Image (tube, rainbow, N blue to C red; front, top):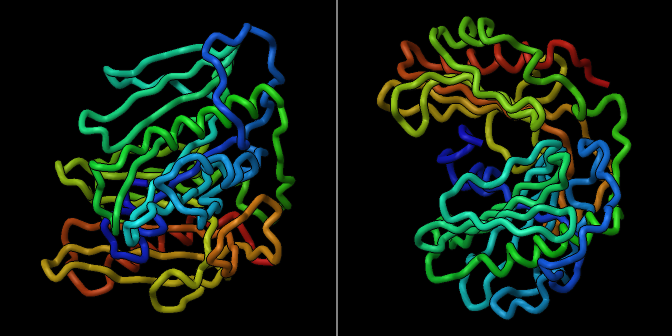
Length: 337
């Protein structure tokens, strides 16, 4: 989620994605016999938050009981484990469901097999985060990441690996049982919408008035990015993606894009560069069909998230006009109910 970072506390709290899949179980032995397991099938129909309960982590004495679980999009889920005795401290875990999950590429990665389930685990040099992949022989599985932070600041004195390991155990148990929960998304959902194919690279370059952008999109995750290469952490370009969230959490002036209610947030810098974020509510759910367990409540909606970053902005509002053009094109094949 490259462009969602560093745009303020509200956006950062939502852009920090953390998900776990599984059910509450004990540890499995890495020497399990190679018995067959049920196939996952179409991973895109899996409930991203359908495989985890907070009791998975009850033996972790460092985290409290007020665990929140909520979907981030159609393949991700957010899970937050509050740290006991540390105000705003947490262990955050996220995963991505995928049909072709590659093993971790880190040099310290260690692989094991639990029957036909292949597991690879890795950690950072200072122990600030822990990763894992859990997959079947056909590549279907999850990528998992765990880290600890306090108000956005990484905590190096808190070990997030036990939380990752509990999640791995739960994922393995789910794969062995085949007890997958699925969601039948309606036709007016953005699920299955070819978001990255709805706008071409040339159309993006025209909208943002930039050339030599590179397509960095991940269509399976509906995370579409076209950006330049200037060596910075936030290179110029545009991105659109799908989020599942409460639209009331987002800032910006009210607008309408292709018939959908939107918020346009101009966060351009005083230096002359331009930056704009647009959140467009494409569908509201009266009742989320998945295992949504957020303690915060609020409205659950499908949002199109659009961001444009310009290296320079010749006149006020240029970035937001470009972002509006990108969002309009991305929704050109969708109509409001």
